[in-house]
Image 1 (cartoon, each protein chain N blue to C red):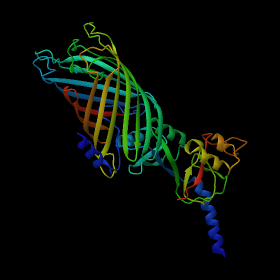
Image 2 (image 1 turned 135 degrees about the vertical axis):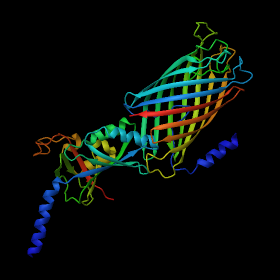
Image 3 (image 1 turned 45 degrees about the horizontal axis):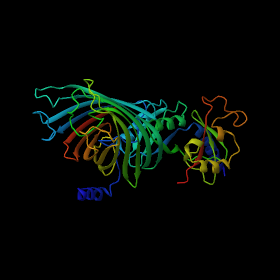
Image 4 (image 1 turned 90 degrees about the horizontal axis):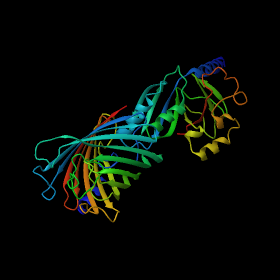
Length: 280
Length: 182
């Protein structure tokens, strides 16, 4: 893994432009005022033997979302999740929750091909139709983006220095263990999420037209840590995820992203596809 | 001798007429690093009705803008639209059809815009930089302020006490230019 990271940084060292349209995290930059962004995620979670509660070994999640730039300083976004229930052997697919998200610009400074952005965010998620207390898509893990219910606030800083774009996200979350049937599984617990993301534009080398397809590569490292002493035993206190990804930007207004999430603690890996379209 | 007079006369004639010459603009936007960023900025600028045509230079992160000559060109709105897209103006250059002949603190109307020329050290040019307060650094603004006592440089609008004989203009705004040294 270390060699791969080294290779990655050597490889991208002399590339002219950089990217910050991260696949697994949000950048600190906002979408333009009055712009709508529609997006469709498809997640495939490769449930493994330890975590597979039933006979189904793949969880499939389909998440449509829409974002809107209210002003140059505030954007909002809403997403809905449809998924199969991997704990039920009979085929099924349906609505499994939602997430609302808002990002606020705090600091924004620009020079030529250089910028610094700092934003704050707030997120509320309610997922759990399929999630009986002891069975989640990925047990021993929590994540407001596709399972669990709760609220998270945090800060994002994105910096572009010497053609290298790096983004750091830090969030504080309160995870609720209420499930859709009203059952509680122990207490709520506090958690922090930290992540670091890097992205680069590989092609085109000379940027001449909006019609050129851009090809970007990404590397993201995401961690979550439970702060509360009394947290449900089924969660790991620390979880790390390594997520390489590639991205195509087509006609300067559509994005096609692919990412593979490699999780620590023998937790299931995940393949993500995202299709994004900007409506001006 | 006569030929020389004719030359001077024709030059004066042309310079009077040059007040109705058109101008376009090159705006450089800071922080643009991706295709989507530039495209978003262009889409935001396209909402302005006084802009006729935008040609991007993606390598230089600049846009060549052709204006509608019949309208007042509000450069403050250009800045607002760029900032709505999440970026900042680096520089606005105004390109006239030909070299101007202006001296310090001259005011001139081109199409529907009143421009005030501040000639620090540079010679006349056909390309000028917009040097109003919101477009340049505080330091630069202070150093240009030394070359004019007109209040309009501070306020951005023309009135009787500052710039007379411009009553018939569509807008109260006056934009300030200095010759581009490049």
